[in-house]
Length: 425
Ligand code: DOR
Ligand code: ZN
Image 1: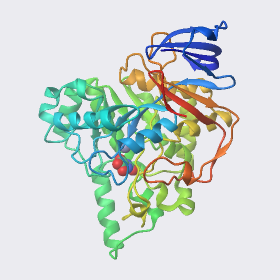
Image 2 (image 1 turned 60 degrees about the vertical axis):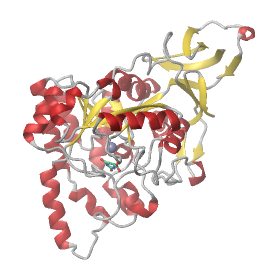
Image 3 (image 1 turned 135 degrees about the vertical axis):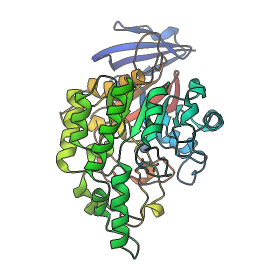
Image 4 (image 1 turned 45 degrees about the horizontal axis):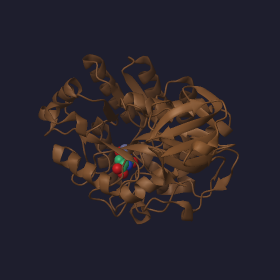
């Protein structure tokens, strides 16, 4: 099978140019800026006027499979991802069973082979129990180690000094850390439960129950450990300006992930969107959001991950104490980031660096994350200047809601390919 993608505006390697891409045996065989005769190909894709980007690599999703498949599973969420131009995801360990053992990793990879339409990698969750034998678990089964320094959905937590120190010292793969200080959270929650003894607290209180200082304190702790041991550390879902500053000042082995949630929303939005934007860490001030947006363009942010965390709308009912935390986003992160290009504060090249190149580099994914000769033919075709409005009927995630309903995007994902095979469009 030989495919020609013709007249595409290719964005890769910090560069944008019009070209033709030859795909053979699932790989990019050749890229030419000269016209190629269509006759010798089995399939010709006309990409005139379309952007051709490497498939998005979303290194932070919760696909809920196994165990919480009423919220979503690998079949539904991978289709949502494909519709958003995402070709690879890395799935978090707070499933049931939790992904904390070789058996659980194997179960997930079998499920993915059966159900997923995109490529999937899996995190190994670090716990007090598996920490002593972390290095005995086959590293080819997982992409990175997830450490929750503060508990969130699922209650996974690792905040004891000695155990954490050992994990940072011995992890054979990058550590991705959820940074909220559990001690600070516990005190605030106990106080709130006392004060609101009849059940719930107003949703806007969420950002006070999980305040900036909890994030900053845990990020400082994680940075200190990574500096001590030279660990490759990626701080997940950075939500404050101060954490961004701390990470930028730290060594090069320590990097930041930003999520659309914190780039789009802030505390002021609880009034409009309620628990739909409840997530952990909580969204912070408009000033934090502004600084995170700046960090996209100036290099302080290394990757974009979505923290795609679907819950049923019925589970999102209630306020700061009762509503489930988490926001579905995997289908819309690329259009969100391309909106920033349309608004003029990011370039296409920067979006591709943040969403494709850097995630591939971080996890050492070979032959992925770029449109390059010899690389996997994982790519997405996008129509610029093609406005569309998000309505529930367009949502492929099982939960079937989005905090972005009613939003009009400037760019539209036309089709998505993995190994030269169309998975969406
Ligand atoms: O808001 C969140 N939801 N934060 C997390 O850390 C976990 C996630 C989930 O799994 O629902
Ligand atoms: Zn997460």
